[in-house]
Image (cartoon, rainbow over all chains, first blue to last red; front, top):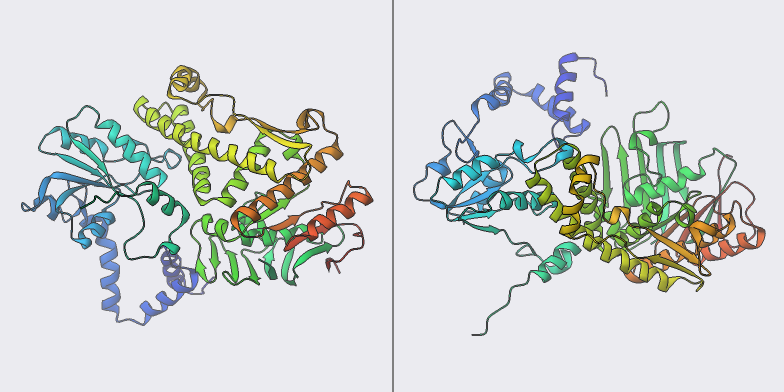
Length: 202
Length: 332
């Protein structure tokens, strides 16, 4: 769609770049912003504009931070001997929301995908190995996604940790809690039967 | 499952069209370049979310336009409609909900296609027969379908690692992953070949699939220098050969054009029956220009075969022999 007003066109085109925003939604949002108080609109644009310079990466675990170490790494109450390895910072947010993990994290920043130019050297894997070598870590939980690439990346990290005295585990896969079997997809069902847990007799 | 209606806007030759179909055989008849194959492709697009001819989404947009839209409505209790739209970005909706992976479509809809190139499954290079096995496997088992798509990624990633001289540690991990997937894929293909044979109506036609190369870690260790030098994976299921045997003779070596066509048809029917039996969903048959090169008697036989399915589509550039089918004319 072409609009006669250039500034409006620019905003629509830029919003359309965001995931989940089609041309119609982009147009609706642009019209909404146009109707807003200019000061409020500027706040949105400022928040977007300053995002990249203000959000930093934690030098230890590569989680998002305001600069310096992230709140998780600074928290002395957490168990710093258990490190959960995830692909992205959003995975940290998800696990923190669940509130049941008391160890610390390591964000590797993606998965190995040579077709997209991402080899292991592009991920924060060396940082993880160095962290483990420095000592004080008892267990590494590999929590990359349960996709083919996530599994391959987990296998690669395990290989890199060969010869270092640390326990390595992988998160479990199966039926989501609170759902019914009939809605699970075939692959998940098959894997969950394969990875079944034996109940001990009392 | 029956496709009741198809609506198409700016899809190849179909600028603004709507068709109604019936259960049983639908014959689409008309002169060349009037959109017969396009109708089949449009149906295939809705069932698979992509072109069955292997073309890019952008190429399916009518000349001079920038987007296309397709919608099929089904006469089925579980799924009732699919919409595919493309305007630089493609969106596939199943009953109004976005479909993210092709797996949802594979589980819901079963399709067997016959195109003028299908005879290659009998006489062409082995890749066509591997494709037949893989297509069948993905339609009858979600686990196999996942194995097949993971295998393809694993193979191309490993090839990239070899070609770009990536560190040995990475190649080693990829090799282990490749071996694990290769074994699962071979198991799937062996099982599918066995099943196809058991569904083959003519007992004189068999598929012979026996993988040649062992794929153990030692085999890859031995081949590593050659693989590094050539920048590709030299052994594995992507190189497995399989062929059809007709009356004890290899079809790809000795069959005539007519025999090739008849083997292809026997195999496609076996594939359709197998998918129907195992998945419990009757496949839709999309047959493009099947009657060409067949004599009158075989044409009538083919029509009878297609009529026995819940729904099938056949395009035809010439006058179709008499029979009970729904006739749709194009180019009028």
